[in-house]
Length: 271
Length: 271
DNA sequence: ACCTGAACACCGTTCAAGT
DNA sequence: ACCTGAACACCGTTCAAGT
Image (cartoon, rainbow over all chains, first blue to last red; front, side):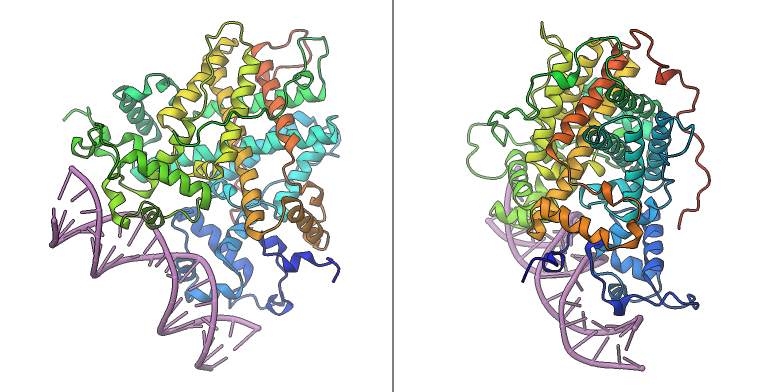
């Protein structure tokens, strides 16, 4: 009658909200040799995603890999989406969580390491960044990594609000960068061309098209050093948040009068 | 024999590399009333994507909206993916391209406006950020917008290399942020709950789970002001790139000796 | 408790055929 | 030139049934 257990009445938004019936939770006993369980299925899913990619991943294909009929998997997992969330968190479990309380550690370096670790992970599992447009990424591994980074930011001197903003900048940037890099990678490799060839083809095709009058110089593959410069950029921004205006070199962005979300003109939706 | 037309021999990586046979290009004459054409199809696709979302978008559904059989669309478009690229560029065509040569314009403000415009666009078309994990986003509209931003960065005093890095930071951040926001939005609305309820449910569910020992405080929906702080953060980073170390307040990130991509330890792929 | 088989309601895409 | 219909090879998921 009260709204104590709202979670059960609401349609699920994430695996992590599931209330697994006790009956389906395997006794984590000795004999783990035969039979499926959630961990085995998740591991197989990660393997399949790594080798075939997100687009070709299917429940039926996964079941085949497990030597089992397609529908067996549904005993352990409610939906394909749930499995993808589990797979995502499984790989994120490999991340080393930065320790804000480590003595003598430079927070800048900790942030840099965290960013590089996350990016490395997303490059090793290119499907992972593709799931971010549809899933919540709120599994325990993701959460503890994020909260580790957040604590580092707090220790650097940011306020809670600043830390949240910086956290958003940090993760959005790394995930976003990984996502576009993964797209290039996948599409080029599917076409059987090197990234450079693909880029060259695009650029030369654009030369021939009138629509590209202004802009073809922006067509670039993502070179290696871009991520480094961009990361420096984000880190410098965080630094500025942490230690603003030592010698008064310009107005602080926060002091600007501009509203955060100016009313967009009622632009026609369709060209 | 020479590799003059490599594009034709390589499997396509984007619609923008397609070589449309003249025969399929409609005479853009007077009577545009009846019959399909690429523009009409693209507009219908955008409409359908806006109302139903990326997951429910299908060629058959689109054809039905157009009052036509499913396969008619294939006369104008080679694949579903092509249509999504066209739809993406169509909405990006609404972006106002920043003018680097505008006199009296402050580049900081131009960047801020560009970021807010792009974010507004991605929020009005939540499916758009979801396509970035799979498509190249190299259409003419995207390109001219990006190159406009790039020119603003150059005028701000960045080197070409710095501008490329800053561009990557800028777009990765905005796209990434929009993508996670869109996920929350969609999943909550599909479950029929407010974003706040969804968040509360997650957080309380996490309290009950042992795996979340460290980290549940990082579970947060993306509040409105986060984007503002994060954007300030990225802009401050660009500012630092443009006008480094007026009064020597610490080492420049670029001067660090750390390699950009340190060799990742050969971590076991599966937990 | 765990797994199967058949079935349902979809997909994207090809292809021969119509007009 | 443009559009259709039937077909192919898939999907995710449900459900009754097996052991």
